[in-house]
Image (cartoon, rainbow, N blue to C red):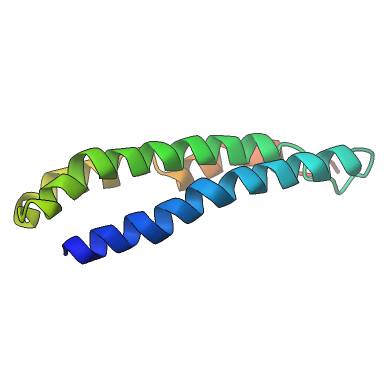
Length: 106
C-alpha cells in the first residue's frame, strides 16, 4: 500500500499540479483570441480555476489525513477519512454548479 501511495503522489499529484495551470492558461488564451466568436467557451478559465482549487484541496486532504494512516500500516482504519473525502463537495458538483457559465449564447 505504501508503494501505491508513493506512486499516486509521485505521478498523479505532480501531473495535476503541473497540467491544470497549463489548461487554465490555454483557456485564457482561447478566450482572448476568440472573444468575438459565439462559439467561444466563455467562463471556461474561471471554471477550471474553481476545479483546480477543489482538486488541490482534495489532494491536500488525502496527503494530510489518509496517506499518513496508510504509510503507518493503519489502512484498515482509513474508512473514516475515505468517507469524509467522498462526502466532501466533489468537482462534479462544482461542474453542475458552474455549468451555466460555460454555455454558449443562443
